[in-house]
Structures are given as structure tokens and as C-alpha cells.
Image (cartoon, rainbow, N blue to C red; front, side, top):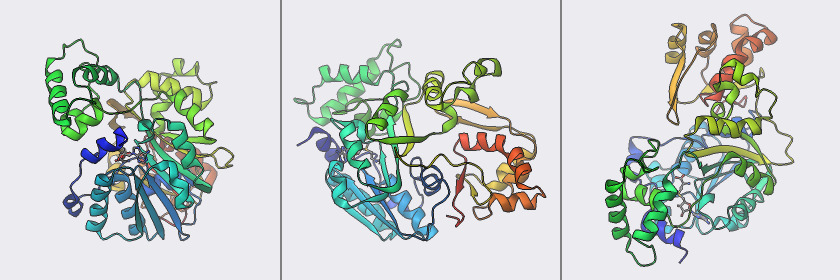
Length: 404
Ligand SMILES: C[S@@+](CC[C@H](N)C(=O)[O-])C[C@H]1O[C@@H](n2cnc3c(N)ncnc32)[C@H](O)[C@@H]1O
């Protein structure tokens, strides 16, 4: 059996209990419906039309359950296909979908290399999977070929810099507890013993951004004992996309990939002439803690460009109550939070609170401008800097006129 399949049959990841569906929905990037609308369809999709999605390497179902639940809530006529090598993972994902009583989901056990045999898709999610394939490019090409014209993908690949120390540990453990001769339980015990014995100088011990090994046996195995994984720098991702004839729409959150947003003016000015892709690679170096790269991509020949402000687009806040944020900003406080271990406090221009207070997932930007007594050019000029920051943190996105 393929060692990666064997691992996920024994240790489905992430560990999930279908009973938890009764009291919480796991959400995240990629593949929130609003993100798909913003990054792939640039807030111009007619969501009354059928939507075919594939969750490639769906694991225990986080992306699948989120997308199916959000489509059902928004009344999107969705047909969602789940595909994974691991039957044990699929059983958990199926139980979670059943626990929620969600319809329109189809389950398949097998390799994403045959994604095309399931038909063509408007959207493909592939989160934390391609870096486990012997040939990630072959996997990405197979998925790219299964996209409908105008469709796109949401992906996550490991980030090399944030995973500093992980491969040191994997190499040490390959010597201490070789996969070929050591039972899984013994490998896990060996990893725990090694963690306790690490000198403080060890690169893994010095990396504060990794915590999966503390959460569960599955998490520890996935991080430190994986049968096959690799990590990427921005340049490697761009190369992979190009080779699969795909084009980057955006990394998420975009702000961490733009040193112009993170450096003080005089330093930022020196980089202003660089293309966004080159800046993204420098942003990664500057931040230094990105252990994953989440990004959206579309077909290379697609005319679609990232979404920008326009009157018809409907702004939505991502898991942030508009009233709370508006109140916070009205007191003159900056937008604050922690992303990838980086604490940010970003001031927003005066007047932003008035816009945010009107963001309800239904009202278009044009209608908000009218309510504020502004014509569109005046509104756009006033709101663009705040939008750059809020969008940059993936906290405010633009969705299609039929609110989702
Ligand atoms: C780390 S888990 C991620 C699961 C899920 N995408 C998530 O984000 O929670 C990786 C999953 O990819 C699956 N996988 C690995 N290689 C695959 C392949 N060639 N085809 C389909 N699934 C694969 C594994 O079985 C496993 O369930």
C-alpha cells in the first residue's frame, strides 16, 4: 500500500468527531464560499446557477463540511464531490455530512490523479495535499485539467520558513524509528521522547509557531513522522502554478505577502517598483513564520483579475460582526490581531466605521455610498485605503450581487 495512504488509514487527519457538528462549524481558508466568490469569481458569479465543486484530498472533511454547509445556507444549487485516498478519513467526513443532514455531496475513494474522471468543476479545493504526492506537479496538472472554463482553485501548501526544524526532526526520527521496521505506536512514543530530550538550541525547539504535535497523536505523526512531505517558498509555488498553466489570484492573507504594507515608508519605497509576485517572496522572508501558504489560482489564460471595488459588489465581513468592528473603529482604535504569530495594529482612515456599520452581506458598495451621500468616485477614493487593509487581512471580501 502507498505509505501515505497507509498513514491516513491508520491516523485520519485532522482528527474529528462527527458529534461535534451539533455545536460548531469548522471554518477556515481556503474555500469559504465568500472567498471563492471573491478570489475565483471576483464577485461576478451568478450563484443561482449550478455550482460543481471538488474537494481533492478532503481528509476528515473540514473543507467539505464548511463548503457544503455554506452552500446550503446560501441556497446555492451545489454538487460537491469529495475525493481522498483514505477510506478511514472518508468515513469520518461522511458521518459529519450525515450529522448535518446535508444533501448533494458525493464521496469517492481514490487518487486525485484521476480527478478528471469525475467530470469538470467550477471550483477545486486542495488543502494540504499536493505536498504529500510523489509528484505534486502531476497532481496539480490533473486538477487544473478538471476545471471548467472560468473556474478556479483554492490551495494550501506547506511553507518552508514557518516549518523550520520540522525536517530536522523528520530526519532524526527516520534514524531513531524507521518507518519500515517500527510500529506506529512505537514511532509516536519515540517522537515524544525525542521532543523531551531536545536541546534548547535545536531548530524545532526554537520554532514557536508549530503546535500540531501537542494536540494529538495524529497531529504529531502528521508533523514529525510523515511518510512523505515537502514545503514550499513563494517562488516554488509560482513555478508550480506556471507549469500547470495556472495563474495566482492571491495569497491569503494578501497583506503578509506584501512588504509595501509591512515596512515603514522609506524602506517600502525601495520595493515599490517590484511586481506583486516578487514582493510576495520578500513578504515571506520578512514575516518569516508562514508555515502554510493559502492561495487561489485560475487558469493561466483566464482574463479574470483580482476583485476590485465596484458599485455592484456586495462587501461581507469574514466572521466579524459589523456592529462590533464599526464600534471599535469609531473609537479611533486600529484594526488589531495576530496572523501567523505576527501581531498587527493597523490604523484605518476616519470614516471607515460608517462604511463597516452598513456591511450586512446584502447591501452593495454602491448602495452604501448612496446612504453616506457620496457619489461613487468619492466613495471609492475614500474607502480604497481601508479596503486594502481589511481585504489584505482577509477580513472584508467582495461578493457577487446576489448575496451569498
Ligand atoms: C493533511 S490531510 C488534509 C485533509 C484536508 N484537505 C484538510 O485540509 O483538512 C491530507 C489528505 O490528503 C489525502 N491524500 C494524499 N495524497 C492523495 C492523493 N494522491 N489523492 C487523494 N488524496 C490524497 C490523504 O489521504 C489525507 O486525507
